[in-house]
Image 1 (cartoon, rainbow, N blue to C red):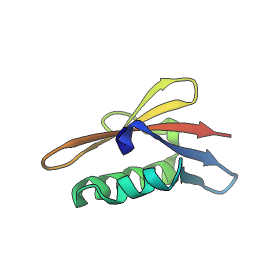
Image 2 (cartoon, rainbow, N blue to C red):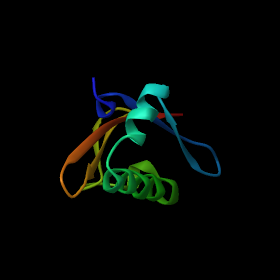
Image 3 (cartoon, one colour):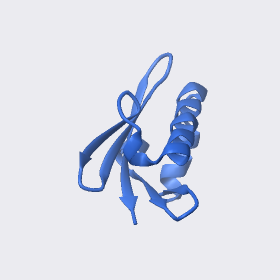
Image 4 (spheres, rainbow, N blue to C red):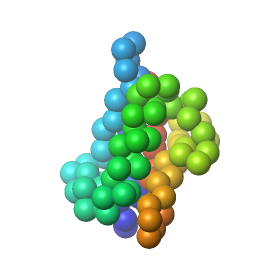
Length: 88
């Protein structure tokens, strides 16, 4: 299973959206991605933190159902997707 088949969790407190990786394996797989994918991931996380998950749409985020979302990162040579779960 690739890192993008696993989950990152986002939750909102009164001050900011935060991210948590499912486990250390997911974090390690994210860190092993090409630099352009990691940069896109960081950019999308910053967008979510600044605007909220529900306000970010294609081409970055797609709502799948309920609290399940998909993050889409396009690099120079590849595309990566990650499942997101919104926690309250």
